[in-house]
Length: 287
Image 1 (tube, rainbow, N blue to C red):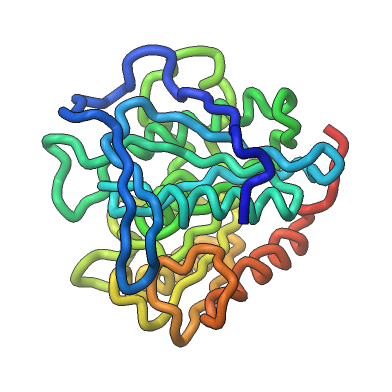
Image 2 (image 1 turned 45 degrees about the vertical axis):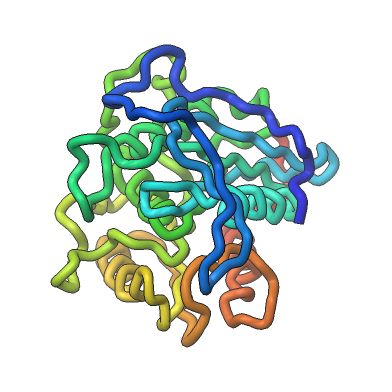
């Protein structure tokens, strides 16, 4: 799939210094990656200037809904092609705006191993506020801004969706007057959603009753992020009264993205569309 525009609008998130960032050595770079799950996909790392890459559908097709896309990569890399550009193309085909979030990575000095770093959450909160502030300009309904994330990016989408009551940085300009609460979240094969040795949600994740609706997708045979991450999170969200839907596939492993193939998880994009439609989030609206 190809996104509607091969030349997305690129918007840096921060007007000056990046809050809470101690910096890293080395320039931003990309490389081609191959694993047992995916062949020849492009990764980006050494991100020091977080930004959004905005892919818009045609004006005739635009329904006003947008998703911020959080690629995975263990908070070290960003799976830019598989979990970024291909997802933007899928969203454009459905009439939605796809906005790839290039959040800071890899982990910075002082970040704890095995614990999600704080920097990407700051970038995600800022991104939601900027998109909401500029929604009219970009053909987006300000109350239909969601997030979709994969692997570590799924954690980032979920953490943003439940953590909006506390902005984790001091406001820097008028954009931060807009809410950083996404209107829905779609975490796929996420990690960091349960304690390593216990079937409980990490203490860093507090779920308010007014968290937005959540759609979860995972595979039972995921050898990178076990399906328990989504299962435990589903139970916690459900018990908190948050509207939540979950799909666990018997097979499919990790890094399935939105690709259409013979694997069982290739059905999740359509199930997600059905879910969005059931919540009146795909109807064309007048902005």
